[in-house]
Length: 183
Image (tube, rainbow, N blue to C red):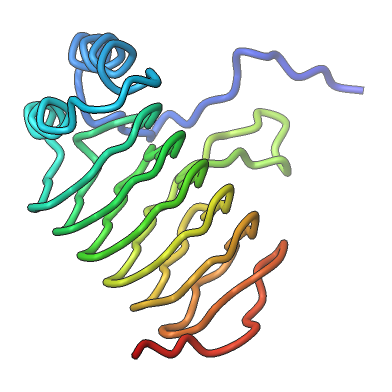
């Protein structure tokens, strides 16, 4: 049986998108200003995201304990609400359009590992959340998923494939359960 070395979890083509120094500075700022339970500081957090390369629209609200891996790979539209303890693990680009809600504890995961290779190579794909999408509490959006306009991923569900517009999804893997009607 071949043994796998723990330090081989890599992808030589993976582009972190910034220098190691910039990444280190972001980790410090993130720990100091984002990953805490204190409310407030929204303006400062928006300012920091922009300084680290994120594109941020107007009316964005970031609640406490938000984790963002690489702000330089993040685009936020207008009136985006990011709830408490959301994790945006954006190893690839994450595009979030206007009027999107990421509820408490939601996770956007752009990376995974190839379990079919002994080297367990890193695989990354972007995530797109179109206008009006709602990702429920503790729900997970997996790499490469596009959530179309006004789709809903309900509490604790896992999106492993694209979500169609104006459709509510539930379960693991998420399945369409009904149409979203907006009055």
